[in-house]
Image 1 (cartoon, rainbow, N blue to C red):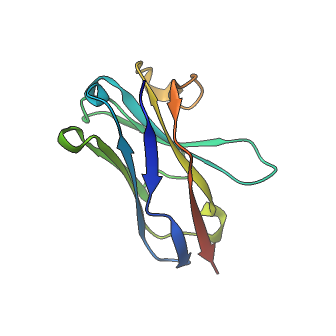
Image 2: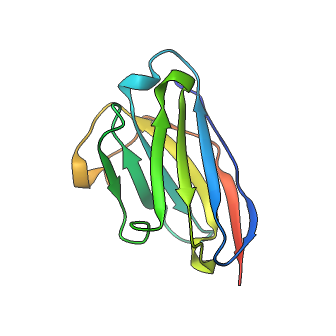
Image 3: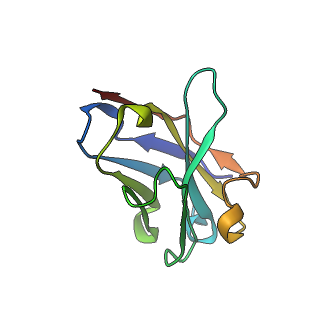
Length: 125
């Protein structure tokens, strides 16, 4: 069992930066690939980024590539999402998730094993 708790969301202006964190419980964090997803009310959940358990391989959605950076600290059971140059369309509830598989470019469509409760990001124009 892995418990995931996101933090770091908030209200920012367009062009600002924000860093989300996701703290995982348990001693097996380093065996999970981690992903970030986001969801706007009335829309499907959208893949943002994923990082392999080793931290050396990442995958990004086109909307995130070049502006967002996913990273992890296995010693502190934490995965991060650094978001720069935020746009109003980035506003959503952001969720982190864990899975014990890595399938490269398909990390956005495979089922994840565990999910956090989400953190709200609001971007004003």
